[in-house]
Image 1 (tube, rainbow, N blue to C red):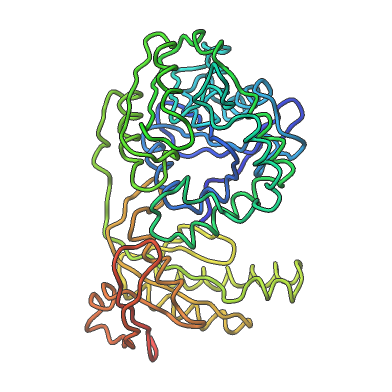
Image 2 (cartoon, rainbow, N blue to C red; image 1 turned 180 degrees about the horizontal axis):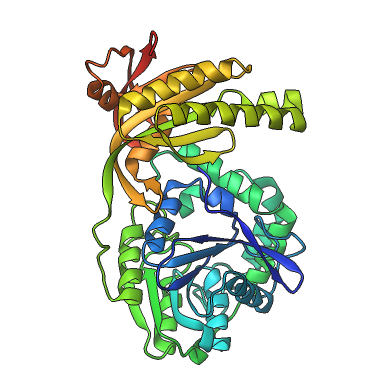
Length: 445
């Protein structure tokens, strides 16, 4: 599922990639820690949900740091240069004043920005934020000593892109195999091993102890007591040295705010600090049927045909699927590369659309698979979100080439419609609790 459109800000000749999500009354800048890639981040369901919740009460601005992700890859920047990147992104997005959320390694730069530009900083929120990375005699709460750091850097070329650190950042994930693959992809897509070493060297030199007391904007500090990456004493130092700061210690050991199931606690603190209201307003939820399709073997076909011919074929595929969506009154929600996400107010129409789309694209030499599920969805603008959407995607992932696969919920709802199905048995769906009985459409529509 693709994220918000990527735009670019000019920061003194360096292109900084950013996204804007939501249209709330306050601007909120998300300053990530470590390495970033806007597109790969969006593939992680917990990240999407966390961003969508923030965007329900704000205009959320996300960006890739210079030297990584979708931003220009000239070189990693200093704290001062990266602070100016935030200013450039704000200018490009038309934001005069914003609240900054600095996470982990993104915390120091956010503090520097708030202290330098208080007139443009509505509030400062520090989540799992660090003060100084190097562990020294006068700062025993850093991540590593200089010798430990250098030893780690020596082998980074062998480890980078393999996702080996995923269990530390995302403990207890229900699908560790997928997580490791995704985390490795995030590493590789964000930067090269050499750039990673350069970036981490900049990080190891971070020390904002002298900056912290100069912060004079409303500040919230949230930190988990057993954070394995950033020691709790970082947060306690911040709370003791930022005048008037609100400090919240949470139980647990999750470092990433949107990892696992711990995001709701942090969202509640952030929402209350920025809006005065702790609980989210009752969301607009509807019962909807979602249809996912994707082209079978798209990577192989693209390689076989070449870019120009593949692009032509992809455009023909999109046109064919859209004709069937219009015919059966489906609503296109997203087009991610070679797949579609659409919604319907009735499951039978979704199934008929899927069958017709399978037949239509077969006529141009393509096979697609399709999955259909019905469930309660959260309405966010013109999009749908929630567990039902994730189930629909997982059902599609289980379908065979040319097959329309549906959940048992859908099969039960279309009883009496004349649609016939073959029982595919029970199967686990990645990241979804329990096992699910799936059914394949058989016969005509």
